[in-house]
Length: 204
Image 1 (spheres, rainbow, N blue to C red):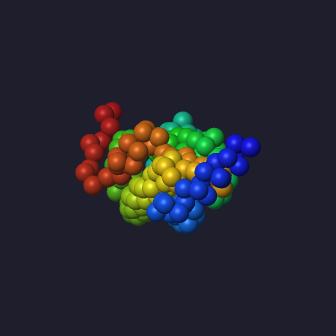
Image 2 (tube, rainbow, N blue to C red):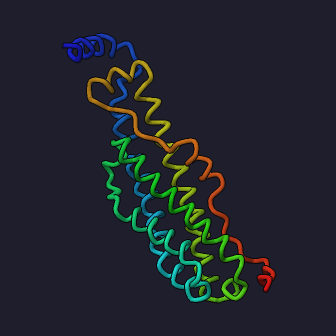
Image 3 (tube, rainbow, N blue to C red):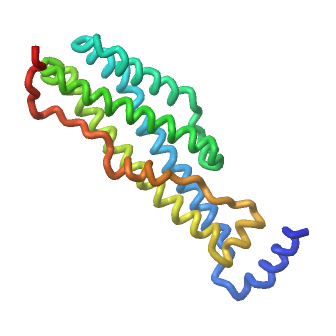
């Protein structure tokens, strides 16, 4: 009954309004899906780098088992979550995905700190190639997430503003989940990957 009442109001008001917003919300939904697909794609690039990164570090710093295991477990947790396009319509699933990615980011950060103790590892050509790829991937992740944030902000604004919120109610357009404040801080300051300065050898 409530929905019918809202529909009648929308039909009466529509001629005097700039538009019902239906097409705008449809376009926004598609834009969000495209932006999300790019976020997932860039996260996958990072996941694909991790096995080689872990193996390379292990070759020089095998004793850092706790840190290496932390990265491996965090990667496995990320891989257990299906990042489908529908995930952006499920706040709980979205939060689970972003939390897992946050744990992986933290694990990688700890690994990079450990690397500072091993000058031989930092000068290894294979590791430096992986470092460059990881750095580029972190930058791409930041750009992709920023695009997603912008797309969601624009879409959610249309969903909640009058009069387009009436159309949203009628056709069940709902606000999309967004990255948290902590996630946005991570975007502004992704894990730093910089091994250009040689570190002093560990004290014996």
